[in-house]
Length: 70
Image 1: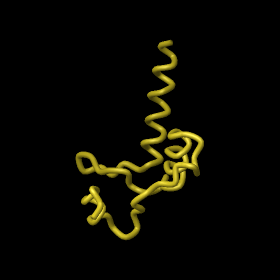
Image 2 (image 1 turned 30 degrees about the horizontal axis):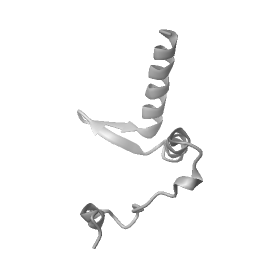
Image 3 (image 1 turned 120 degrees about the horizontal axis):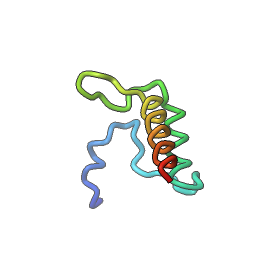
Image 4 (image 1 turned 180 degrees about the horizontal axis):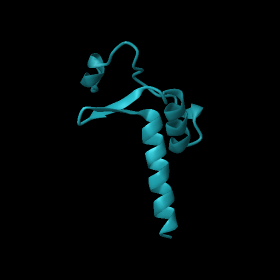
């Protein structure tokens, strides 16, 4: 039996493992998924559905702001 008992609760569509060799970096993996699932809801906050595209845009805007600060 696996020490990862939570895996038994994963839906069938959720992989239990990620092939890390398929990506050059964590950023590469995240960028790919944000693009792939752009129109889907990433999470719901205070009754508002927030899409992966909106998460991507907001994170890029935050990064640009931080870079502008030096």
